[in-house]
Image (cartoon, helix red, strand yellow):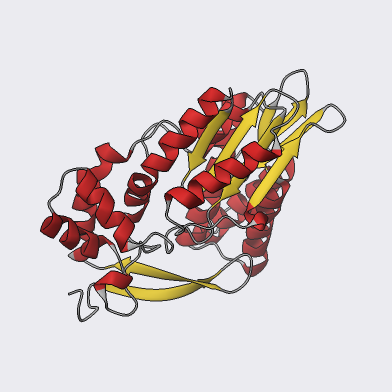
Length: 307
């Protein structure tokens, strides 16, 4: 199954930054095997700062610790999954108690090798087990970053390969920002890279806060109530998606589910804080709902309420 590459399929998707990202997805029964391995190692993968792929945590809970920050530093690992080597995975499997032959077999089952050579394996983007195993590989890094943050009274969180530290003080010293990046790179034995373009540093400007992390933005005065909103870029993308569907007359079940999912996400962000939903998007969505109902039944619905 692994030798003849019959256990998975491979395709590419465009990156936002340009170029293409290769996705590898396991097929049954390899997918089922990976799911069982992930369930087995899940208890060992949880850390103090990680909010990804843990029940009750999410990218929204990863932003919350930074709500009162006056300075915030964010960074993420370039090509995080594909930079996670089979060697790293194998080592972690051994550390949590699997003997060498079993650990090696498990690592082969959850890693992908474009060359077919076991030693060239890495954590693939599309395997269901990859997020949990990635958390396991990062657990020591998480622990050291957590201790670092405690010593300096910083707030810290991670969601998948995105990290953030913050402080209510005026700034985060440059040496601390450089140190957290070195911790990630050095503890991975050089596997992980954090180029400068993958870092962001925010400070209070003109007594106002506008800190972005994970597609959300913390906004408000330096002293006073702050809110977590969806970034303007993401809101524009949502508006374009609905507008494009209206123009093309795409009222397929798949498109309806996609747009409803985006609206439900907005509700999860705004209604949790008792904030009004973005009016321009909701007006578009109301129009889309009406047209979708007409396309489905041939009649204009009477029970739809406006935004």
